[in-house]
Length: 155
Image (cartoon, rainbow, N blue to C red; front, side, top):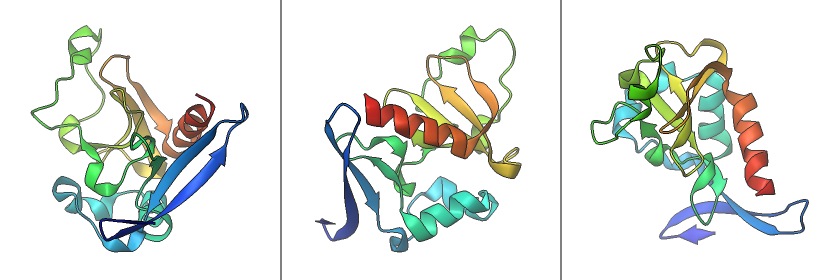
């Protein structure tokens, strides 16, 4: 499909309940558009780079641009001063990621992310980061992405 001169693939998915869902995968050849991420792109785990450069620039529920890998221009910089992470005050121990080097590539649309901390991302190591829930550290990026995409299909 063509949306304002940008090409995407629109997937029609029928879930187990018989509902029809639409997922968008943007053109991977349009290039990087995220200023904070651009300087760190070469440190991004290679499997994530390959997905964004060769498969799609994101893959998400079309109606909300969430429950999937967001386009590079929408990757959330967790160190953004405008984002309030109230969960930090509720944690019993210090956070184990550096927000200033962390980016949320997957969003559920309600304040939860699967994030890569560039100081600890060897072997697709990631963190489930949320504005409301206790973080889960040292998770497998792709395992969590797969799990959450399936959750999106079924809800």
